Image (cartoon, rainbow, N blue to C red; front, side, top):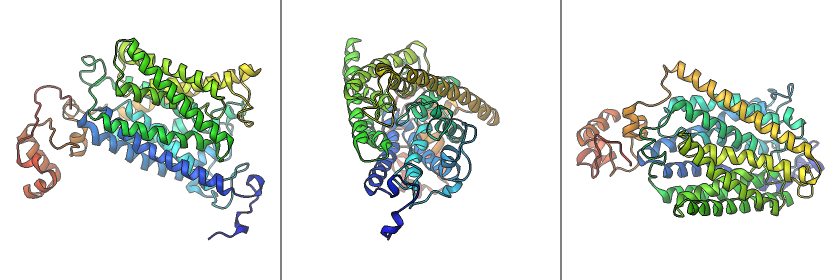
Length: 472
């Protein structure tokens, strides 16, 4: 157990680690970690049942890979000694010189705690793009892509804004990741959706395939909403007034955006669907992320209104007018709101809310709006360019096979890529094929296959759809 003398340090603000601040950031780290399985639940519920296990697997494997990558080199490249304003150094490789009993300069939490908190941001950013390429991208291609994208896109942009890079030096503000996370992931999602092309029968269903499990999606959306309090509130890095401001802004923006989505849906002749509620809340949460620690409550209410309108019509433009198959509307629900939230800082940021921030245009500082606009454009352009280049390189190396085969897309990625199904009473294969395929894939005798898969091996499927695209 640490003694009192071990908490007296040279780098920490006020000369010691704050147990209160450390507790808050640790709790926030756990809340953000919970957002990743929540993301998987949300996406699985919103997609067709034949792709349930695939999306769960993609997110959880991605979380593991990206967490290891962050510890090995990511934290160092983002927060290591600056090199030309572009990237950090290598002094923190393998989390070396990332102590438990000392802080990074100016902080009140252990450096290791800060590394843990930031690892959650690094992991969730590329995983947001799984929603854009869902139901058609090969697992191997996806994992290679998110690892390379993390290194080439996320690490440099995070360093530019948060790690002492050139955008931060210009005064760019991004409290919890509207530029670093949502703008880059939104731009990357749009490009990835274009490169991969639409799913089969996309136009027939206007891009809105029937979701398989809305209660599961509701659980995911609810957990994301709760986890976002750690996402934004934890970015204060202290349990104090700024954290309170960030959490309150998070709640207000999400709520206003949700109401806007419901009203606009009704205006366009729709009903207040569960999907509308989910998307409205997530758009508000994503959009307030960069500004949550800089805006007053009245400003937040106005921004929430703008976020709801922009994201609602963004979906209609990208999916319904341009026919781009961003499966779960990541570009509209994360990208557009993230950019708007970052620009809102330039208009309405107040030092009265956060002394470490800056005043915006409405408070006599037009320069802040200019640098915020520059940061959004640069981050979006960087992510757009490298997403396209990386996908083309991976496609070339994999024999132009980023996508699964037409047959695999028909039967679902659960079966085609993982040899399992989420719901055993729903099947898209005929009985003979399913029985033979299960036994062959699992390399087990019929009796063992029966014990594991039950009805799928021994009895006719309760629902079989053949010679047509399944909606399951």
